[in-house]
Image 1 (cartoon, helix red, strand yellow):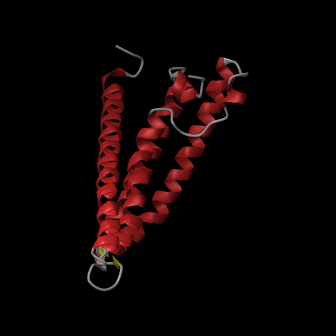
Image 2: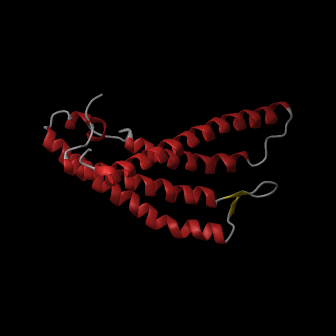
Length: 178
């Protein structure tokens, strides 16, 4: 058994599965948006009748896509890092920097969660919509996805922080060159 134990490994497996699933949902939504944009352009050019609500759907979907992918980007080592600096450091210094950056990530995404929960609940309770006229798009899904994505991001940074303290962080998580 690894140094994490059964519970720790199970928790990491669950967060990894959730992160991958949300990333696939984001990709599917992006794929759908491609067809919506094409239909809107064709409707506008050919029939002089665009698909109603396209700007509202796309603006909220972009937010949803970004925050659905955040957890996967963190766990796969895809977040921005300065490899010119980490490549010159030793293993201990790199682990230290990984731990510090993970703490900053936990703080950053926790602040977003804290600041977004009330807005998401308000959007749900007040039935908040975006757009005017024929198609009004509900805002609450995007606001709850921000809370979900940032919560998962903070949890993933917590995993990286604990792994860095234990010396079990992978090269992708430490920012080593690929």
